[in-house]
Length: 143
Image (cartoon, rainbow, N blue to C red; front, side):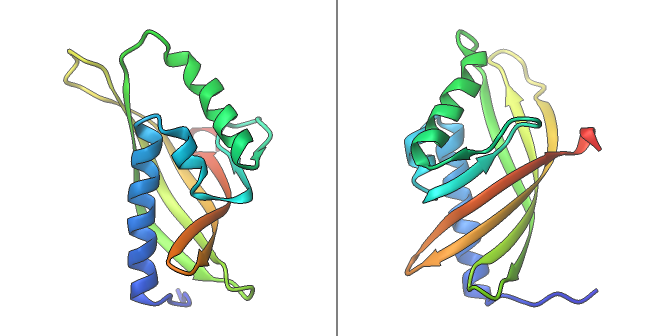
């Protein structure tokens, strides 16, 4: 298998970006999470649901999605691993990531680990910043 390498500094920046992006999501800081997308970025995270387009729509989608946890003191952790990066001719970077969502509830030692997903991002480097132009998430259990 042959893959075009990205600079190790860029790979490190993207790993750092993902760590902060996922921590914002897991902490319910949806506005901060949405700011990691381009102004007109798209975010498709649930099967069969149209992508949210633009930062305000991303926030609204996340607020609506997380309503299912109202009254449930759940903690969710998004675990990104095996980050594969491929430069694109327009200067953006295609990122393919394996992701697990881990759900923990107070008083329960055993976490629920589901779903297992593959995340497909198009990332833009804007000076020192990394921004997500588009994100599509595919759940492994759906084939």
